[in-house]
Image (cartoon, rainbow, N blue to C red; front, side):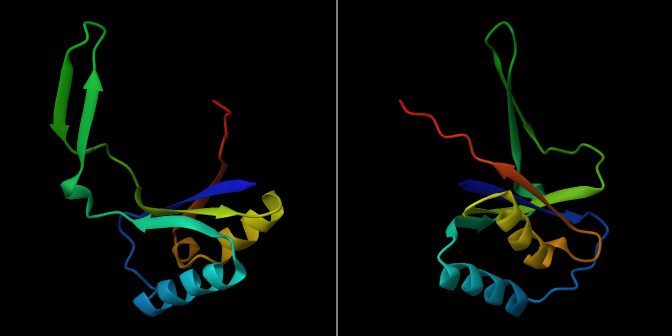
Length: 112
């Protein structure tokens, strides 16, 4: 089953993990054959939000600038047998340390 690991860092968190930690984690997932895809997101200041009103008009703004204690930093999609295995990979993620969090969501797959 496929799961998305949404990797959040506390907005005031000083990164306690190194680039080497992330490289080792990705290599471990690749070597185990569970990594489907994953990306780190660019800095939040480069984000743009699109909203479409009931009248069909599009509004584009910089941001988001919602007051939040967490910032979505990236994601991984993994293919593992079950939720327990997904939770194990989430716990190994460097982003789960020191105030960070990894949200595990099953991916809904549709036959179209």
